[in-house]
Length: 284
Length: 294
Image (cartoon, rainbow over all chains, first blue to last red; front, side, top):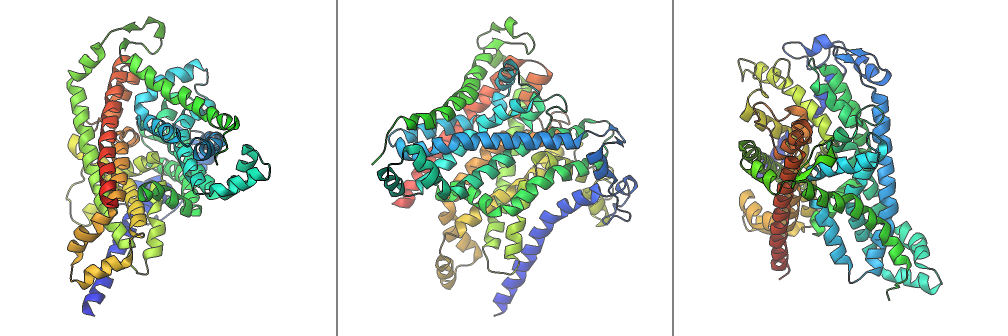
């Protein structure tokens, strides 16, 4: 009995430590974003702001001057990130649903080779392709536009989403398709009316991962965009670190604003994310 | 019955063409550039220079230093992430009240953009006003503020801490998923037999988790080997190249020193290393799967 009690206490102590390790840095980002500059420079730090303010967040959203010059146009960067992520996700779904379906149903001999080849190509490190991507995107005259980033992100996310959709279509019994064929449906009709509704959870998983990957991407956004026409949120946040006088309050507000959309997505769609993360590793 | 009609080609071709254009073509083109003396702004002046770029790279001390830093970063961060991830996964697999809350919590750091994570830790580690200095000073652990990102080796370890904080929960989520598929009776049987925590861990838990551990280690290792974002944000490869990993070295060579050919040569070397590691890992994985099935 005593041993059981000791184990209980140990569990809660460990649980509190894990919670603290996760929450404290996030808390500090939030507090720093809403602290006036004087408080950020205090010794020792003000763990609870005495005089919280929304000035940093307001500056980011409505523009204005920071200590180190003009505040970047955050609203525009958010728009760029959102549009690039949405367009890429849309294109990847549009291409990977039929491709995944065809692989699962119509290429029984050839599909393993196909999947192996695209997954191997995906293993190439992003940095190794950055040069040739730069040259291709320049030649296509889509450098410094949404489309330049969409082009690159699609090439990275598409193999992965084909692989995921293929896996989901495999879980749907073939007999359902066969019944549809007997009723006179063609391949497209079978896909759209029979299989597609059953793969909605898979589509949700692929969409969320694709959106998060685009939102998080930094290297290509850094190299393929020059100004606010196309700069994404990650590039704009990174620019805080290259100035001589870093305005930490503003920087934390920027980090916070960049974090909120993916955080909300993850909280709402937690179930799909856990499925997506564990699918590969647990099923093998 | 497989219905093979013309539509199957219409279904698969668009995606295949895009992958060929946007993925295979750049791969080949990188390899080609690595044998050229190419300038970013005057590509028509590029000449074929044979293996000169490779010679230059392999004989430069900077390359070997970047390789060493990358290997240190990869090994230490992945190992720390795995150990923390494993123990938190075991914790979250226990039946206690905080479990649901913690399971929702561990996914949050994973959602934070790497760039935002980088600026957050840069601020926490700040030499003059950072929270880490403030906290350690108040607790009486340090007497003077430390410049955490100011010396090469210390900076590398601090960047690793920032990376571990964001990524160790990936292991937690994956290993917890795998743990939940193991029947509780396995652990109870071992407990009845009088096995303590450690012997249960090494004799029951780890062997049963082996496939999940292998896959997640492969994924995180290849990601860590490619690390760029957090280095760019927190240290820009400095101080004194102490945190200059291979990816940052490629970036520096290609876009700051404007030596595209050499940048492409390093890229190709990285790709070959990762592919070799991937093939090696897959071979081991395949063998393990056979063992488990048998």
